[in-house]
Amino acid sequence: MERYPLTAEQVAFFRENGFVQLNDVLSADELEALRTAADEVLSQRFDPKIETSANNPEYEKVFVQKVNLWRVHEGIRQYVLSPKIAEIARQLIGARAIRLWHDHLLTKMPGDSKPSPWHQDRPYWPMIGYDQLSCWMALDDVDEHNGCMQFIPGSHLWGELEPINLVTPQDIFALVPDKEVKPPYIARMKAGSCTFHHGLTFHYAGANHTDRPRRAMVTIYMADGTGYSGKGHVVTDGLGLTPGEPLAGELFPVLAQE
Image 1 (cartoon, rainbow, N blue to C red):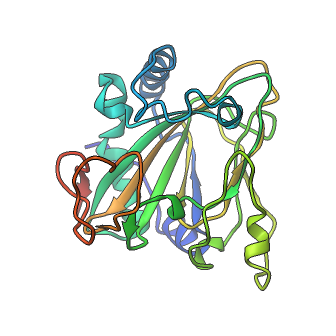
Image 2 (spheres, helix red, strand yellow):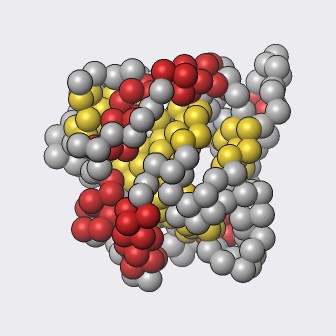
């Protein structure tokens, strides 16, 4: 397996700040293959459990979201199940084994685009435990003009807050009035580079003010042994899972381990 040369300094940065930016993670061929797959699924419609932003025009101004594409498209599957990306996640979170939670393609369309408001990811997930993180892979060069990621350093240490409504957002900073909020890190990146962020890290992406879509492939990982809380979620609804049991099996495969 080809490995990304992750350094001890990058791991330490992630654990202190709740995020890290890694440049040139994908080769030119890997990036082109993922872009092709993304464009193919963007042109298709799937069932509502995949098209989670469909038929909601206000939500789609924030981003067009397609979930668990690895189950329906071979090109996306090859990327999402990549041990190279998963091994980075495993080392950053410090797990002996890492499982897939789900993927989603997040596309900010040109035109009437809205920011993705400051929020944490973890409050939306039906999980017990806090060893989860996301890889946000840029399929286009990103900066403030088209909606790059921004992070509040150290915010992953502030605990789990209430979910933020992405269409009519609350002010998440009002929920932590006693915290020192550091200036955001702005993750300007070339396509094929990525960020990883902890499930509790405050993050944001501005509107897309350009005339082209801004595409990002997000893969979410969880430490093996993460439990199911029983809370509703599009990925787990209807699976007959038992609260308290680990999220495991072929729908949540192990992608990297020591």
